[in-house]
Amino acid sequence: MNRAVKFVLLPLVVLAVIATSVIWVVALTKSEPETPKLGAVGGEAATSLPAATSGNDVLAPVEEISVGKERYLSPCQLLPRSSVESIFGSLDPDVRLYETYLDSSLPDPRNDASSVVTSCDYYGDWGFSIYVRQMVEPAASGSELIERIGFDTDEVEAAMTAFRAADVGDDPAAAALLAHLEDGYKVFQRPRNATLAQVDGLVVAGFGDRSGGTRDFALIVGSRIIRMSYEADVAPDADVVLSQFARARAIVLTNANDPSLSQAPSLSFGASDTLGETQLLEPCAVLSAETFEKMTGAAPNESVEREPLPLALPDPTSSRAEYGIEGSCSRSFDGFSVADDTALTKSEQRYGRRGSVYVVFDIAAFPDAASAQEEIAYYLEDEDSTAIKTDADAAVLRWTGSSYVLHFRTGPYVVDMRVRGDTYADGEYLDVNLTRTQFVNATNLLVKQIKGQS
Image (tube, rainbow, N blue to C red):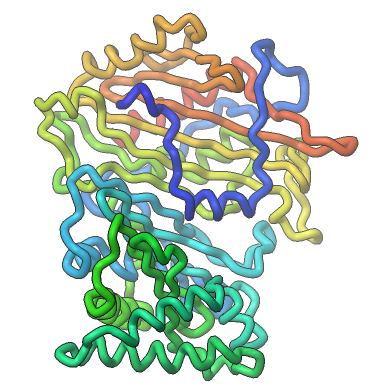
């Protein structure tokens, strides 16, 4: 695990989604806060979860997920990694995937959003992103959907100028996409009277970064808006871009209309589900919705944020493996999202309708317990860390200058966890912090989860 970057940085597109939830990051004091407090973990047994497996079975939804009147589309399934690589080129083994996904249907009285955005982002030497906005409340017109695409007129005009100059005579698919773009451009220019039927299937391109290598395409499928973005230091020629996105569009449209398309997130692991003899674990299975609720007292009601394990795993004897192979999961509760006519639970009332709580959970697998102990020893020796007695092999609370971070080791696994909470009272936001006892209880709960899945 890279000690220089212990708190996973989410990509900009994911941060934009997070920003829609009112999550205030506030400082914790070194003394234990009196009130308000996060939900106690209690002594109840953790929910038993299946052992980790290669693929995404552990996160596959039990029931079909819908958004409004349409089927939920998982972005990483719409254009899976194999398709991304066949179209745009091989991804570096060290490339990371960032993802937001749904694990329950909308509308839900506990999430009163009118639309929801989920995303799938690959970041390496070049990047590819696909995000899907699905309407919980039906769009009133085609013009409403066009406005939600998010392109400015000058971005679309810049794209059309470049594509019209492209030589696509030898590529029928690229030529067909250019014709669709011309049709989409006409509707985009005069969207006021556009009907839902007119915009179903519409495709629009935009160059938001004309001097760089970012190329964006947006599709409307039913009342879903699907945006794809390719980013590199230097963009390919316009004819190449048209050819690439013609292939991507064809796959996305086929998958979007496939009623059997998986609604699970991306694959959980790489080619192997072990690192040496260490079983790899899915972070979002350890920090399940049930675990989050036991820790915080609030049931999560926002989309799940996930950074899975690397797409390719190192040799367990390599120096890279000695630093741990990590993944991350974040879940949150936002009181503002709960419908006005839906009551908060007793535990959720400590946050209120304008408060929130957000948990970021990192788990790293090491080839053996000795390597994991070397990692946790770094924090045991930190003057800003305080050891706490838990069911873990070792656990510390580390003061970062603005908040506490929990670090613990159980067997060959090292966990980092940060909790952010607030409530609104008397015209201001107040911290809602974990006490040391609650950190201990949270650690014990997570240790039980990890042991049950490894």
